[in-house]
Image 1 (cartoon, rainbow, N blue to C red):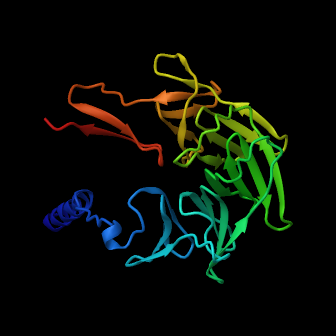
Image 2: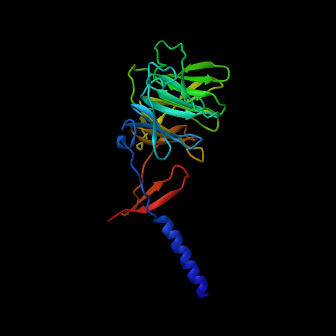
Image 3: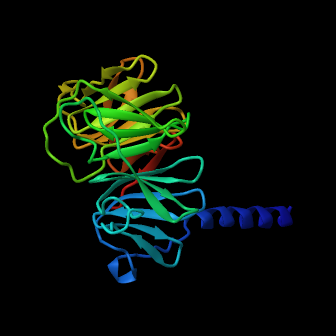
Length: 282
């Protein structure tokens, strides 16, 4: 019985020690080889490399050093621009990079970039500003150039563009404007003045509504991040706070921390759907 008690206590302290372990963070800046200090996006590819998109160059980090990719007008195999908005990888290992002057595809086996060009029927030339790019489940590439999205089929080299109901203010943005594909093949398209849900089958955009804590509908919501958790819930980060999609209400509702008890707060993990009760420091 004593042996059991000692073993149980040892296991308990082992578990508690796992929850109280200290994490060591390493900082990387231009002093460690990063091309620029303002980071717009980070992506890990299938080989384990960390790609860091900055406002002045694309960086590949191998855990020790950085390889820097910058545009070179004299080299057709260089990246098309140094201002990086977003990155994604296709199933062949190619890295697609959205920049402030077009879309580039990095081919690892050749160690060079290919510039992807196309035109839309939209009256303004918007194909220079690739605010987000993702690889869809059917291996097509989705390109976000609000208020137009373009689906590129690499196999037959065709482009299909669709214009949403969003307004176009003509200004150039400095940060990523996200898009997301859910498990039902619906594409959620962010913009600086709202969010739409796009169906590739019908080509239809449906505008999403956002409700604040007070129950009042919000207008011109700037979408800064989109995320789908393990339960399939869609979360939207905006300039007005965080929202989650309520299917029964058919709208996004504001999420906030409930300070129900004087000394405690509740935080919700959007990845696992779990909640924790955390005691405040007094």
